[in-house]
Image 1 (tube, rainbow, N blue to C red):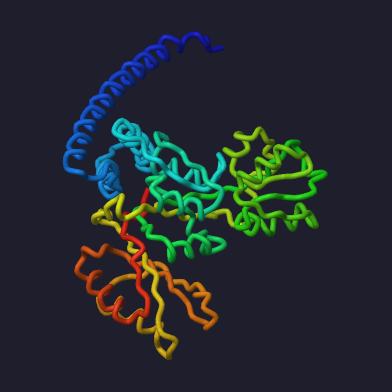
Image 2 (cartoon, rainbow, N blue to C red):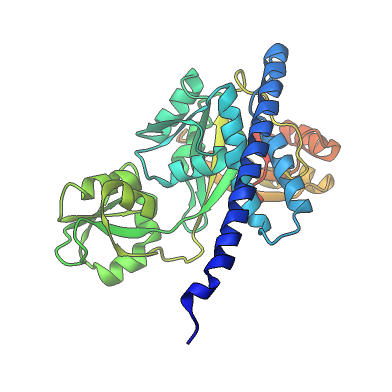
Length: 367
């Protein structure tokens, strides 16, 4: 029988080598932080922005390209986002607004995009996220804009029509919904609380496992978890982080009907407080338009894109609420207006529209 102690000297040696590498890494990270502070001083003198999403996207893309393993390339982005977040915070911690309370997917998206070295501003509604960011109380806002199962998040889209905010970035999350409760049982549940989108995304599971139980919409999944922590007759649908935050049992895991359920979030900022991102090499441009109610009007929207070889990745309509059966069309196209083809297509598209607003051009989420 092998002696368990025989491998201990070798293991101890590897641990000591890892400790030595960790110390080297810490020294290098502090060197990077010192350089970041120098960059920050130059930016202050020039009056330029601390956060440039296209620059950070290029840094991460470059590191992925030279990565030789065994560290996986998909692990590079979250590691370096945290490093860059910590370095940015030395200059000025960024204030980021998102739908709260603690434990929401919006908070997870904010931390995944900006890193954890931020000032968190949880909000009670999407309207409050837009309001704080428009007023300058937040530097950036994070809002969900579409889900792979349920489609667009209508309120987020509507708010772009009435605020000056524009999109400077995007990120997406695999959304895993869990049933959370004070007691570890499905018995005796009188109501399930969650955001309306989450209730819709778990419709079939709830029909099968909790038929007849009330489904109660609340402002966020984390708010549903918070309320469930106060009443054993309630259950919430939320993330595992929310369960940990409020001390709840994870009664059922991954109850969403679509196993590949994913939500796309956009990062918004005020154009007077943040410059528009420059091209990163893999960009998207979002816009909202409306056209006169006449035959062929929607077709005319697509002609400039085809003529200039610009691909459209998203096209959907929302009622204009005018009472005249008019619609706004939300369009995402591939590319940046600094690209001559995109610029020409947008110029012709603008001429065909009764209403035209570019919501932003930004690096697409490729990590």
